[in-house]
Amino acid sequence: MRKKRRSLVAIGKVISAHGLKGVLKIMPLTDFPERFKERKRFVFYNEDDDVVFEGDLESVSAGGDRFILLKVKGCDSRERALSLVGTFIKVKEEELPPLGEGEFYFHQIIGLDVYTVQGEHLGRIVDIIRTGANDVFQVKGKKEYMIPALKSVVKEVNLKKGIMIVEPMKGLLE
Image (cartoon, rainbow, N blue to C red; front, side, top):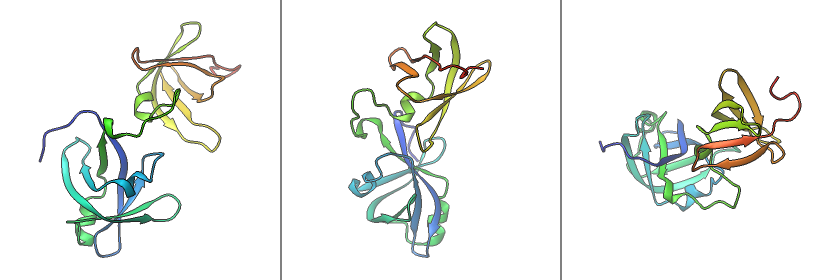
């Protein structure tokens, strides 16, 4: 096993085996699922960022609307595939596709301290909930807040300072 690596970003999680020949059912953790077809090699990590398996791409296909079916060399049985359930496919941060101005990856947003435009500290972003209309930032501090990811609410994101400035709409903080 290799030592822990820094700046790794999960792009998928193995949720089950598919069939008998080592195909993995992957839940994508990315807005860019096409990256699975573009990658030649996949590295699987446990929760502690230890490498548990590596393999070259054999095939990839859609497993319905929300999943990807992935076959990698060296994972040739259902038992081997089941042993990878719960692991994460991760990439180095520098391998991520560039985003447009004002766009951020989830891993960049989670952990930011949230302040109102008046300077009140609301807490820290602990999760991002995807909804049909817009994402929602789950903020925990003295209280828990659900802050919609809307330009009318989020006034500034400063990754260098580790902060987000919001102008809550009426009733949001009550």
